[in-house]
Amino acid sequence: MSAFTPFQSIAATRRLLRSGEITPLELIEGLESRIASLDPQIGAYLGRDLETAKIAAASADLSKPLGGIPIGIKDAINVKGQPTQSASRILEGYIAPFDATVVERLREAGAIPFGRMNMDEFAMGSSTENSSFYPTHNPWDLNRIPGGSSGGSAAAISSGTALATLGSDTGGSIRQPAALCGCVGLKPTYGRVSRYGLIAFASSLDQIGPLTSTVEDSGLILNAMAGHDPHDSTSLELPDEDFTAEIGRDLKGLRIGIPKEYFVDGMEPGVRSAVDAAIKQIVSLGAEPVEISLPHTEYAVAVYYIIATAEASANLARFDGVRYGRRSKEAKDLLSLYQKTRAEGFGREVKRRIILGTYVLSSGYYDAYYLRAQKVRTLIRRDFEQAFSKVDAIISPTSPETAFRLGEKTDDPLKMYLADIFTIATNLAGICGMSLPCGFSTRDGVELPVGLQLLGRPFGESRLLRIGHAYEQSTEWHKRHPLLA
Amino acid sequence: MAEPSPASQTPHHKIDVPYLARLARLEVTPEEVEIFGGQLGRILDHVEQMNKLDISGIEPTAHAITVFDVIREDVVEESLPKATMLGNAPHNANGLFVVPKVLD
Image (cartoon, rainbow over all chains, first blue to last red; front, top):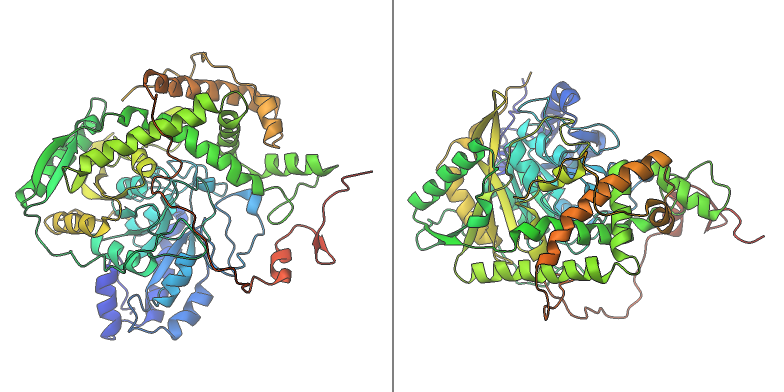
């Protein structure tokens, strides 16, 4: 009889490990058998390296902050010696020659990377249906999507097949799947965490962050990952900080902004009522609600799909069949080697975005699209600066709807893009944000999780976790899990 | 939230997919040209709403958190072994990446 029980937080597991009630090896084996029985129907994992993980478990140093804690890693993040493909065929055969800085730091903190989490190809998507391997299914209803692009990372947490995972968030790719799967997802401030070793999608927007079952756990992971890295000059040199330090303090004196542009018609009624109830709850805990305005919200999706695709078209130029990954066998000369390799290796959504990005950067269109979008980005950033001069945090739904059905939006990319309407502006402004469970909405007769989004000032993660933790601990939402067999 | 126009509607924007695909070194099929043309046209129709805004005098934002001139000490550091890096290439020989002949 194994001592492993699923859905334990990192904080609780750490106590069990230190008291000897469970060994790191039993923990890995417990996850292994749960993955074997549940993941075939969910598809959260693209691969796992349990042998290496077991060797690491045998010598785990339990005195370290994350000693013996296994962590699943999104397939966009390099793990030395492991295949890392960003769920793309173009990286077939690629074995990471180095650890991403976040992986290196998690190892230093005692954690054990052990699995590759499914995702939309190159993190382009909101449903994980763009994985070139297979889609991930939502553990709350297997006919539905888990959100994306970090859908595998979120589905593993909500099905209890991982304690914690890493995701990356370019326009909501941590927060939206966390919301749709009913777990916690944290996007740190741009520059908080090194991007070295993350396969780049849009370099001015990408940020790595944790998906966990509790707010406190996300702080424990961030503690291990944050900080300047000489390999990423956009990661900032800041004083060391314990992101869990404010956890446990009450919310008296904190001002919470409610942006009127995020509470509009067209939202799923059950999402609206769950978020309204969560705001009341946070106010009852002592926070003061303040109505605010983020007037340029409606432009965020447009700005994002210009800036993100422009950056992607440049970043993805490196996949040319020369240095890594697959190469077309049909090539006759160097030009056709590039063209055919990329045609065979990239999926539809990736091609669509490369073409759009090429268009907005092309001669004659640069000023009208790319430069204009960068200027509107300034207006969006200012909206948040003004709001944060009045409030400590901003509260909203993470997504206007709960999990939709597989296939529901695959033929209509614009509809898919608009699913990210509440998360995208955060990345454009570079601020931090998190999603945490705040109830359920009944859609087509199925109860599905709703996510509450909290946004904080640049480098205000500690305050965000304090608010999130206080709310979480005053509810039972994080204790509910899907029925899986 | 602005509802997008139905996917069936013909977009106002026309986009030269074969030309852009050539720039991006991407071979596209006639079917993709048609699909992408319609979808990207509709996305550009949506993007059009940015033109409502007065942006005169507004500075562009390239990075939300401004970082200036980050430089490191000019010291040689150990890099990854050549064999490891070449090991990921689809074709290598004599310590080099191999590609089809470029010049006749």
